[in-house]
Image 1 (cartoon, rainbow, N blue to C red):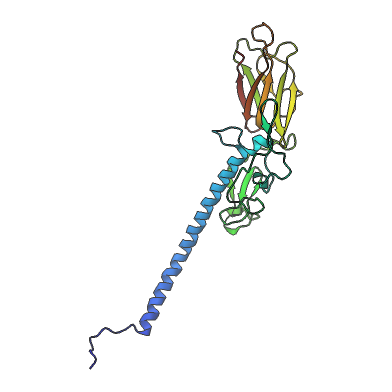
Image 2 (image 1 turned 180 degrees about the vertical axis):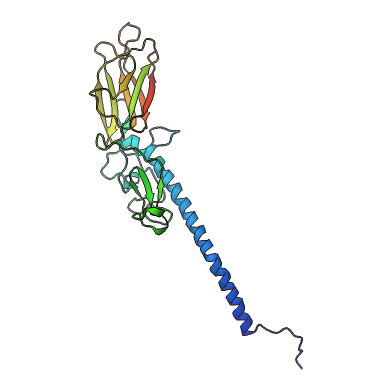
Amino acid sequence: MRNRDQAQGFTLIEVIIVIAILAIVAGAMAPLAVRMIDSTREDTTVKRQQLIYRAIVGDPSAPGAGFLSDIGRVPDAALMELATSGALPLYALDPCGVGAGWRGPYILEGVDSNGRPLDGWGKPMDFSGGQIRSGGQDQDLNTAADNIVYPSTPITVNNVTSGMNLGVLALSTDVSPPVFAHAGGQITVYYAQDGVMQSQSLASGSGTYSYPSAGDPALPQGIHAVTIKADPDGAGPQPALTRTITIYCPGGSTVHQTVALR
């Protein structure tokens, strides 16, 4: 005879109740899981945007190592120039030992087969208005409400000299009274324009020389060499001095550089 106290199996109703409870718990957990996934994707997007920003403007601890310094302008809207050189000339040194040209790839990870950087959702980001943009959760760049943009302060572009950024450079010497150029001397600025090194001879002057002065061309942001011939002690012209200067400042700001003449 079967023992009435023997453990019985689950009834159909009990199984249905357990399944219902599990379904309720799973339904409650699903939105949390989605939010956690989206949060992770947002964090990934911001980290990639920070890497892209550094690829454009360079590492503050190693000035002149970014696309802007090498090429003399910001990259294309699709940001593909950070991963592929395209038609840009490759990096080369000029006689002053200052380089210009593409020396990427400036970004190595998180790009598609065309070289476009991807956000945390695997969608291409773009560069517009001085900011790196992601479509965010809806993966649509045309709906700005949830877009993720970096940096908060756009990279300034003043649309001067083929859309390059304008830097203002104030030069001074470490001698007193400061003398910049002897009679017949010369100040020359070298800079990159679309990856090609350009040079511009400036008027000789003494004291603190601000660039650009009246008649000088706009100076793009980036890495620059300044060659100066000067006679601080009146004993005749010294050999030309070459200084490498990195400029990264919004239009109207000033970067000061003291040039040693001793």
